[in-house]
Image 1 (tube, rainbow, N blue to C red):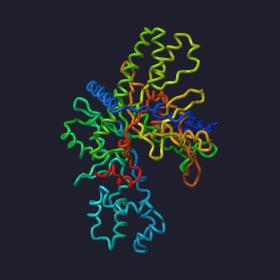
Image 2: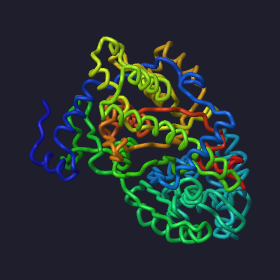
Image 3: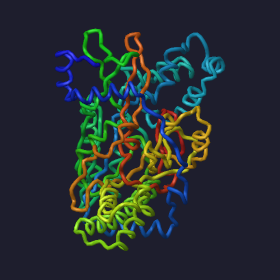
Image 4: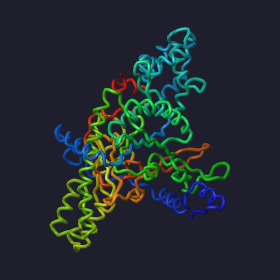
Length: 512
């Protein structure tokens, strides 16, 4: 039994976390989180839609025709710090001494390909001129220059990019100007998330970066606003303290800090389902902060987004029509069959096996339950070997099959059959979502009702030299949306340009 002291309860209260939530999380640690059970990889023709150019254009037009009457919002998870982007370069600064060996000898000795690529192509980085001006005349030779360049980029007394949020780093260079992902997202929003001259954007940011984002907004929004005749309505939120999860020791007891307080840890990007739940719009576009494109690819990306929104609007119009019929009770047996067929064929819903044995009213309740859910249309790109989640048909413990985005960490690597399904997967999740979060009456769903809490992750960590177990919440586009209705659509590779390491900025898609 878990004993919580008055001091513990006071701590929970200050974070807005209920005692029940903590007890449930501790139960999760005790029971463990089972691996998912993959039934099949979702592929084109079985779980992933691929459209011809004509169909693509028709869907774009469908969205454009209805766009004027829709509330649109672009939701951008932007709380990631850039420290991981520079991991290799932080390491380089720690271990390389230009006074003791040449850069060539260092690379030869360590085989450090990342540093080699970085130093070979330094002049292609958007911040190259800025840093070179700052270190001018300080280096005795080219090797020392490369070292001072990396140092100026990262240390606190320099540009301090390692501390920056990813969204505020210079990513692209246009002549003498540089553009941050934040700025690129505004330019993009104008093309597909604007109605009546207004574009709504919401960024989830870390508390320590609040001020930096608002400074960037003041610096770049007015100019884009003027150039594009757009009024930007930009809002921000932080991850809620109430979404932090408890850490436990190896006996599944709350892990205590040296001051006696319980250790809580951020719950991961799945915590953002709460931030998303606080937003309301007819259509919400979701895209990660670091997935931006240079101007020449903007139109292709915008058309892809409009196509996904067209898929959503079309399927939603049908779903709303059927939901209204069911609500009004005006449904014949033939009409019920039509609704069932729509759910199965167009929304990828799997109806329970015992459906045919149910009475007419019970069948209608099943149809109502399956129809009245948020809908997500997820863009999928062909897998080019990027690590991360992909689209699969999965089977839950009750034998129900559904379409889900699954991370490799959720799959049992020791199970040959499961690994073979993983290897058959052809597509990758680029976090390119278009979401419908309202019901047919225009009321917003409570998105927290559609989370599969059993899809989180338990990881091993250490704190002050002691081992502990940490709990990550079900990912935002994984378990946090597990009970949504889901459609996967193939999108062009150019729509996927994440920047995981600083060297990703050297890829052709980020060069002007």
